[in-house]
Image (cartoon, rainbow, N blue to C red; front, side):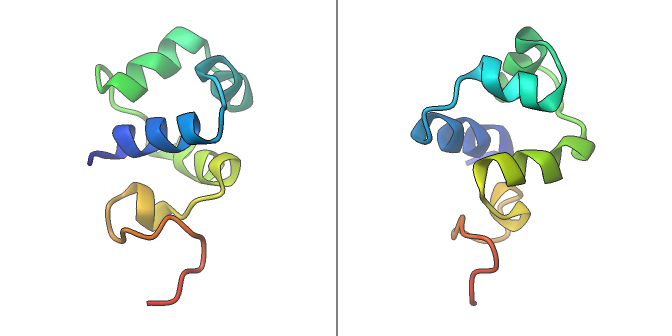
Amino acid sequence: MYYNEKIAYERDSQNITQKEMALKLGIKQQQYSRYEKGINVMPVTYLPKICKILNVSADYILGLTDNPKINAKK
C-alpha cells in the first residue's frame, strides 16, 4: 500500500472527511483529494501534522512498519 492509500484508509477508518483533513492542514479540499488519489505528490512537510491528526507513526505511513501505532515496540 502506498503512503497516500494508507492516509486515506486511516482517515476513512476514523470517520474524518477530506474537508476536515484539508482544514487541519490549511489547504483546500480539492488539493488534499489530489494528494490522496496520488495525482499530486504530497509535500513531506505535511507528514508530521497528518501523523498527529490520525494518531499514527510516520514509519507506518512511509511503509517502514505494518504497525500504525506510535512508538510501537519492534
